[in-house]
Image (cartoon, rainbow, N blue to C red):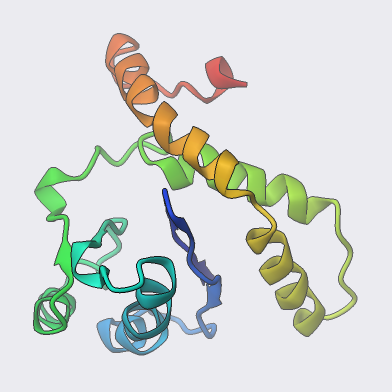
Length: 160
């Protein structure tokens, strides 16, 4: 499993979660939140880290009380779950845009080992241009309006 993020100013690093039977809040704090706050936010938003608003998916570990408290204690604004788009796969920029592009790039590569796969994945994700990310983010509103028009049905085939 991996975690990555996008914004109009750039991409976060891609990070891999150790394989475990259950992703816990502690695992998320250690492997996701702290690296985001300590490394990615200052790099992508130098001097403006407090302006970042984090949007996560609705995985139980992400919505736990412990995660919300940790975000608050670190001064990270978190978009509350009630304000997130519905749980449809086309409803977030990462889902309808970035993940597909990342997979297309990754499928063109070869790795002979797990270590090699992680290296290829890091290079592939970081190769996505900021111009393309901005196009994805700008198109989000159109996608949400299209989903509303289609009464919540998936729109992926329409966008291709």
